[in-house]
Image (cartoon, rainbow, N blue to C red; front, top):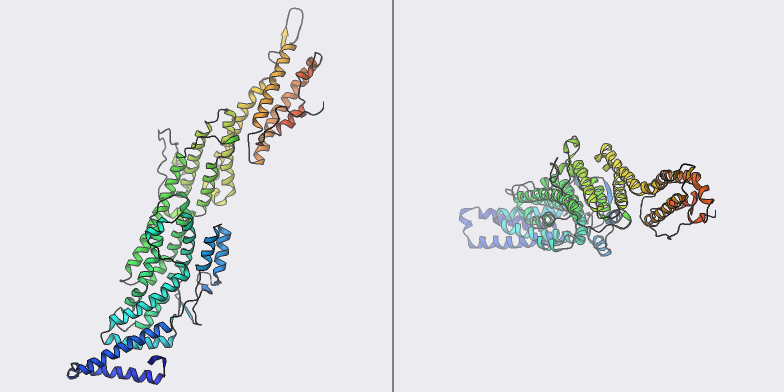
Length: 580
């Protein structure tokens, strides 16, 4: 090839081409078949030379390192993957796929980088300046001779192959929208993480550098030729890139997709200014429009998923009571979910513009809770939605509590679950700030009320056995305590307490502090009452026959027995007794 050889030979050849072009400008010579033939031969040779220069200097972009323009530090693919693994466990094969294909870029050669002051775009020199000079020299002569189409086609085919190779290094697959929608969500999660990293590199480095190269070779050669070559090179890859995000935006909605959709939304939102810079011409308007429409659909998908999640919480149909009145799986799922939602509060507050659609002041619908949204004025749209989710969760839990046959266990179930809600809100600064202390006080009051209701349902009838009424007799000649009535009272107390102990030892309060507080509250009522009753009437029983059949337990025995409550563990039918 001429351009691979001596520089003087290159210059002589270009001068010869120039001479032919000048000859063509003469009316007397332009119709000469020999001159036309010479021009065609020259153009065919220049086309080959143009292709050869492009191919020989199109080195693969190495996946070694890249200066992140947003933070100005070196980032390696391994750094990105370590961060992902800390944030989220994923299947081994997905991790391996990320490792092999998720990459940052640097130029294969030692080239200078240039930055646009108003964005995070980072351009690199894809071809050395000497080769760019030769390409421009050839392009000028081909275009001035009417070989624009051939020049663009050669340029586009070579550079598009280079872009495709970079896409493969980034792990961007050629998937149709249908292909994406047929994948399992677990597979898509890994691909979304990879896409977000890849899209930043594609827009800010790969596409931007291709645009720069087009400008270096074609700017000023003809009208918008540089833009035509740029779109010939990147339009197909750009559509391929954004088709993935579009497929996600119109895929079937489900709660587990919300956070990755928000990640996609935030990444694309961050890229929109750079997309507008890179694709700033009239011919690339379709790319800008596609990106903006995808962003809008991702926002709509996020709003739709949140609304559908609210309805799913309200309608969750399980009716089988959880054993022991412990925390319902729905409660754990919902509270963990909204804790994650709070991490996206900035984005969601921008996306959410309306109150929950299923709430009203007085709905009149027994399947929907009433809620006065005027009480929440001043709160952000997201905060109102989160409070509404907690309201409908409680509404659903209230319904589930009715499936317990034991009223005491029903109250314990509500106490456990509302206490868990309170703890999750308190444990998340973001969530607590949005929910607010005022509503948190209401929730705290509700679980404390449930604890009080439990104690009433369980212990009022037990403590009723320890009253004085009905034990005293009076007659014409004497008055005193009815031993038979007293014996029945002790027998009733023993039977009731044993039943409560046997039943409620297998009930469960998972939170150790709440469990201890409730035991203390029980002991504060039970132990003094039993001690006083025993003190007043022990002598009446012990003076009769078989006192051990009636006074079966000491105060210490009851104190020990209370410690068995709410452990979720079966106990013997007979209480442990200390030696008396």
